[in-house]
Length: 376
Ligand code: SAM
Image 1 (cartoon, rainbow, N blue to C red):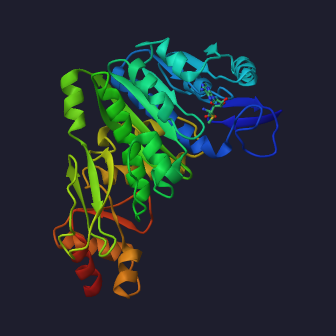
Image 2: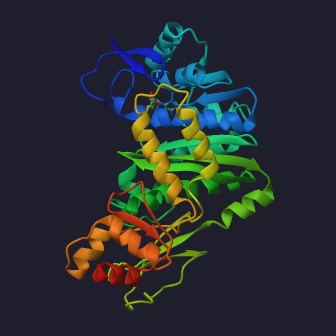
């Protein structure tokens, strides 16, 4: 066994030479960042509900999430830790004892677990191997009114368009391999979640969504009501992209066969996907405030992510990569801050993106960005 210290807990997992889904019990140290963010998100959500809450860790592995929620989040009075693997269940029981907590431990297929517990939990955490798609129907059915649905996807090669067919199969959506393909992937995951919830007359807004390392993670605030679901679906649409001049735009509803308004080339479409906000400024602000009261190993990186995400709120979908534009123009790339400053002075809104250090989100078009780059 090896001992792991994360947040305020210590757990033990069977020693396995590399991180693999074939390990007797799965534990990935790289995901500590994801779990640190999750602890803050669950805490911020508990503050919204302002009462004791229950959390379901549906793919629990070593039990680390359920245990961390019980130990580190104020107001979590109940946590379920479920995993289909019998060795994982033993490991969860062992680690619970180590940390003096008592989650409700079960060994079921996550879909059956969720179906068997409708409306039971304030927070549902879905953290499977690869795609969450096969479990989203059960998660949507199970999610209660005013709950948090947190979902991880590690099938980023499909969501980002390296492979198109898996994304069509899993998410019924077409990805597109652009410079902002990780944002498109995040929006496909968010849109898919919203559409699953709508089927059960539930609406969603997104409190935080991020694409980090090899995975994507979304936090949906679920509210019951057919009208809310209808309103939510108004945020579903497509992003049209021109590979010739890098122009992009979004359309709600099904896109027609379109020509690029700037250069006349045929545009490609990604979607259906979420075109609304991926984050909530107040919620992220509350997470940042909570970080001061927690002992998180990845605190600095988490705060950096959260700060950048706040800047993205209210910005249009997609972003421009300054280096990509410069390489099309045949000029060397100026400092990003100079381009951002130029856009700001010209009256455009502009922010960085958490997805790419050379990307900028702005309501300016590619031609205006080109002009500013050439004037620098
Ligand atoms: N949440 C864990 C963490 O943060 O360390 C990692 C979970 S790991 C990515 C996925 C887990 O899902 C594995 O422990 C695996 O045994 C379990 N699993 C795979 N298929 C499942 C299913 N259909 N239902 C429930 N658990 C499943």
